[in-house]
Image 1 (cartoon, rainbow, N blue to C red):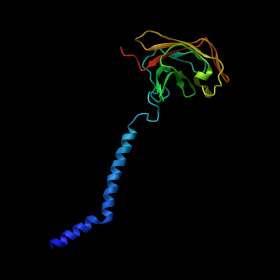
Image 2: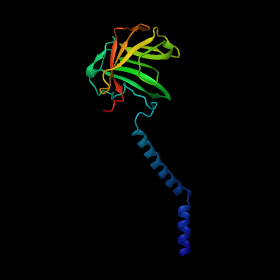
Image 3: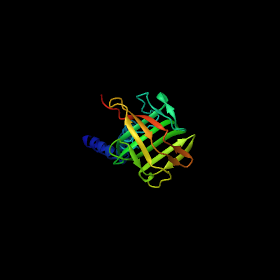
Image 4: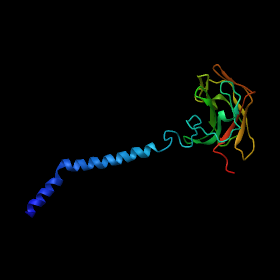
Length: 194
């Protein structure tokens, strides 16, 4: 009788269908936990160190921001303007971004290891503008812009994290222009530690 019981037990557990069901069940649990943990991570598709001022939750800690550039102008709390210095895709860059709406925004960035005033040709900076829903792009690899990025960047005070960016020349990209009367006041990202 004991022999029969052990034979039956061995055959029951040695049946391929029962083992496979256990394996499938364990795999289902592992895959489910992996999916849940991936959904809880943040912005995994962006390069490390990248600041996205166009995200659904823009960085808006200080109300003293503005842009007087026509087509991407904004003021105070409605203006999501940042200046950033850090590593993007392994390269040290400085970037300026203004976001007023999906149809009104601007990004400018160039290779640099510190936030300083610059005067560089179109082959050394990238500018992307959406004004009234029309997109204007000049990539440093294949520039379409005319005019140097000639800007003076001044911190308002070391502790408030606000920088004023003054354009000293004219940049034309198709039918869009930025000239020497234009200014951006932006938050430094990340905010300085007080």
